Image (cartoon, rainbow, N blue to C red; front, top):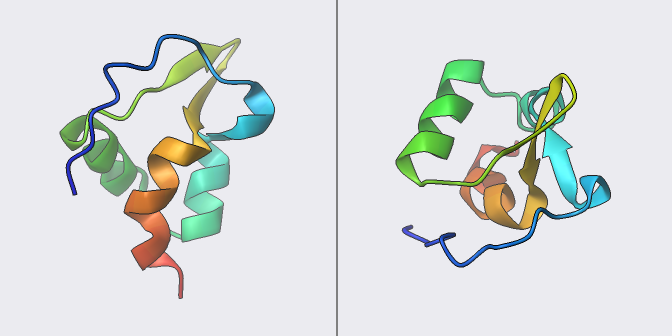
Length: 68
């Protein structure tokens, strides 16, 4: 599944994003797996203070298969 996020110009609201910890808890995947998915698919991520956020619309399609 290849999607291009290069046309994303504005940072989405925090309520429309997951923190890295939220993704790891929700999908029960390893941090290294998440890192690989984000970098391979060029999924945008945003720093806000000490947290990194990933838009829900960008990560959910890739991680739906991890829900058990």
